[in-house]
Image 1 (cartoon, rainbow, N blue to C red):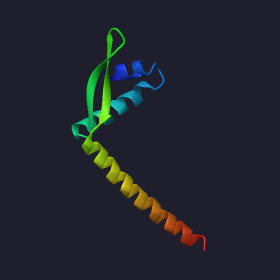
Image 2: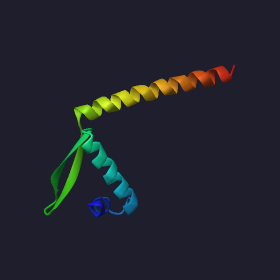
Image 3: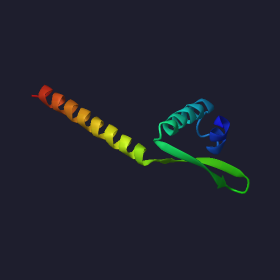
Length: 83
């Protein structure tokens, strides 16, 4: 499977990066944040396609909210430093 991802990208990413990406996607799928399905690609090949789930969207929204809070706090600290 890891080799398939590398092959699918026609060498644009290395094998180690493809393996890391596969592990990441598998973990996200196990947590219910993404779902996958096999789709026909061309006459013979099938490829695994990933889609974010409702749970994944909620997780993303929460992490984005926390990131924005953090960024705002850093901005506040930096604005005092400039005074």
